[in-house]
Amino acid sequence: MVAIKRQPNGSSIQASAITAIFIIFSVLIFYLATVTDDLPPQTNVTNGLKSSLRHSVVKQRQKIKSALQSLTTNQMPMRLQKLRESNNIVGEHLMEIRAGTETVEEVLHGQSLSVVRNELAKPPMEIIEVIEYLTGWIRTLHETLATKKKESHVGIWNAYHDLTVKTLYLWDREYLERMPERRDDGSIFLSIATYRDENCYNTVRNAFGKSKNPEKLFVGMVQQNCHEDCKGGILDASGRTEDVEPDQDCYKAFCDSAEGKSLCEKGHVRLLDVDEPESLGPYAARYFASKMWNGENWFMQIDAHMTFIQDWDALSIAMLKKAPSEKPVLSHYPPSEKMDLEKEASNPASRLCGPAFAGSDLESQIIRLEGASRYDKVKLSTPRFAPFTAAGYFVAHADFLREVPFDPFLPWIFMGEEIIMSSRLWTAGYDIFSPTQNVLGHIYVRRHKPKFWESVHRAFTFGVHNPLQEMVLSRIKYQLGYPESAKDMLKPKSLLTAVEQYSMGTERSLETYLELVGLNVTTKEVTYTGWCEEGKILYFK
Image 1 (cartoon, rainbow, N blue to C red):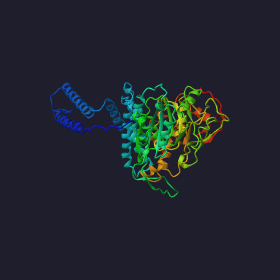
Image 2 (cartoon, rainbow, N blue to C red):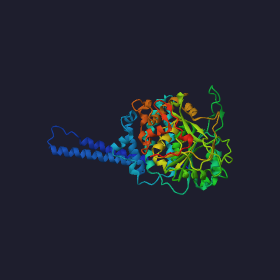
Image 3 (tube, helix red, strand yellow):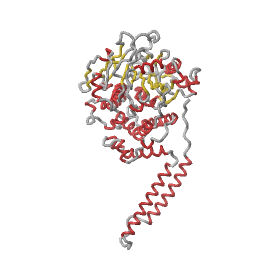
Image 4 (cartoon, rainbow, N blue to C red):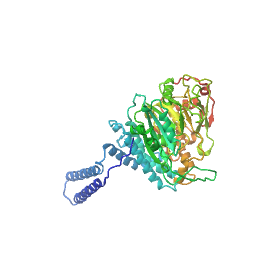
């Protein structure tokens, strides 16, 4: 079981440091009072002696500066000292980064810090270290945003951006350099993001209960629950809600159960616990969950309201291995939970083929995935190519986490995560396939249940989520080549901070991908390609 450790009290360290700093400053004042940069004009000291004295002053100032820096950081591990140093430098250039005139990488490399690359010799981060950091960061963000309750969507974004660029982004770059080695032992990491979901307990219980190899299954759960003064979902057009009981603690319920106790004690369930007002939406939750991967062989991502066929894990990996590609991804929209997966085992699975440009203002013409259907007449032996990944079920070789890491600059979005992940994976050389058999079911209808954007409205002001999401989606639209989100059109420029670090791959071009899947982001037109529906086997360079 993964637990959070409390940090030791640092008051005695701080007191000693303050005393020492006071003494050094006293010496500094006395020294500078007796030896100054500009000697009086009447002095008879030679120019050489003048220069020597000035050099001495500069040297002493540098020593004092070094001593002060040592006193304020020498109790920290070297890794934290480097992060603190880079944080200070990024903070000094924050306005330039926000305006888009400098990038974070330019600031860091310009100062010759290269913080991330200097960590190559460091061991992989421990899971407890990851969870401790993310827990603290989310709390700090919540405290920061609590002072922005009446801000516009731009003010809210600026607060998120400024904290993230100085802290989480730098941590993330270090994390990516210190990821553990991927094991070749058949283990599976299962990413589950749950938002106030009454189905979470059954999802986790059945994931293990119907697994062929539960001893090889490891869950990374981001639980976003209400703990007090809870409201249910919106009940009607007036926005009416009702008071409800606090949400069930999915992690505790499973770990206290007869089925889950030993698994939790052996570390098979890792938890990042997020208070409901701190929720940043499903994509951000999946970002956090991905950081709890700990070297498992395979990566799977599902929702917290799923049903399972027996041996779903082994069946998923077997289909992935049959896919004709060196870098396959298996994904689709699972059928409704009402389907009897055991009876349907001999029938073909659905495939996710048809995209559409969203028509509502809320979704800002982002690409939606809608054409999920059963196109094959019989169950196939080999998975067929598909153009898109679905967030509710995808399976991949875990090394994709290094090559296509989740983006920390996409908070508060609901739509857009699937098209950006699909395009980034494909351009990085990954081929997407649909499963040949349905192994999971999905509860699609959760009427009157709480939604994360309702938490956003309570945290700030009603209605702010829509323009906030629309603005953040511009980061995705920029990466996909929407002309209205071109760099010279985009505001604020901070939406593009570090975008190169979390954008398209270099194995294949975005233009080729968009043509392949039939998307024209300029005219917002979809061209029927046919290859997905027909189940053709394609060969990509």
